[in-house]
Amino acid sequence: MTAKRMLDATASDLASYGKKELLSSIAKSEGRVMAAECIGVTLPLLSDVTNAEFVSAMGADIVLLNLFDVNAPVIQGLPPVRPEETIRELKRLTGRMIGLNLEPVEESAASENEGTLWEMSDGRKATAANALRAAQMGADMILLTGNPGNGVSNQAITDSLKALRDAAGDKLILAAGKMHASGILTEAAENIITRADIESFVEAGADIILLPAPGTVPGITLEYIRELVAFSHSLGALTITAIGTSQEGADTQTIRQIALMCKMTGTDIHHIGDTGYPGMALPENIQAYSVAIRGVRHTYHRMAVSINR
Image (cartoon, rainbow, N blue to C red; front, side):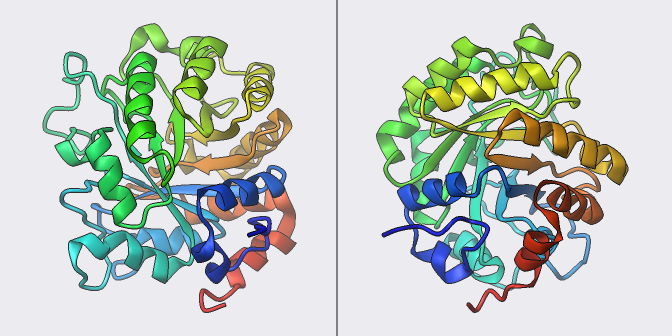
């Protein structure tokens, strides 16, 4: 099957694509794919409409679920559905490619978030069993990364990638990287991710490398990320530049500036985080980011096209 570029793909197109076609569809879009992260366990901004539907309505091509527990799946605002059908129902309602975060946590480091929303549960850990369950539930992609203070090291990401590749690498797109230090202070600023980390991730099975967006982490410049994007591409991997520092709640001028810097890095996917308000980015920032990287034509097309096509 020949995949359309994701800019033009409809819900029925995406539903027919496997891993190979989805990766091709992203690559063909030449840096004009939007991924929006959202949290399903928090109260939706629109009460009876899921945050996933909301970010899709504002122009997101990919919905990325954070804090999603594959053993106890919850998406507030979703119509009643059997737990194992949660992701498939979300795909039916949004018509989007759906991924979820799993975290390769090192228990000795993951103490900062005890008793908080970010505290780890077994169903959010990056294990082979959880990846297989996510695939059975209809997920298209797993992103191995870390929430604030959960102690996710790059070595832990590499180790988890190997396990997930062997268990479900033919069923799921595997993405990996960090958008902030995630509680590992020795991996802060320019040490968040290096060429050596990227090489390890790709060798361990990563299809996509996640990098912090320029201007979102101290010391992370356009030039630094541009070099890492080029290196990732040379290894055959796609890239995501990510806003994971609550700047998804900044003003639209800041968002446009970050968007254009990310565009200049050569990235394939543009990610915007989930805490503009608790649960998703400011909706106007999703739209502003989309317009900055692909104009109103493609933004409004994505917003307007029916999920029944």
